[in-house]
Image (cartoon, rainbow, N blue to C red; front, side, top):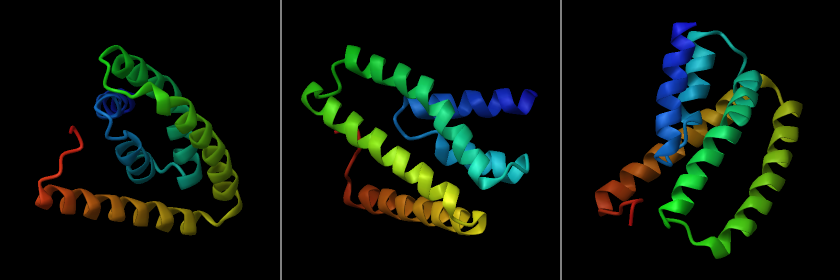
Length: 123
């Protein structure tokens, strides 16, 4: 039980910073707790609703979000989350794990490239 609290704490902090706690939560659930990939991704989606909402409210209060784009992003985010969930539930779990691992790899490489160029996500 204590490990779930610690992982939730770390993922919540990372989500609040805008990094995406799922990059830690999903591997932690699958590797350390034996949760299936699909279940871990489902838990991540449910976990993201309250944490993402709180982070969004704080960022809006800090005026770090351009409001004119919020509704467009929400609409397409929800639409593609539904589509992605349906897709994830139809494919083999091993393939889902590979797709998620590939996604993390691409994102990591992108972050390293941006760091080498001196590009900051805070700008």
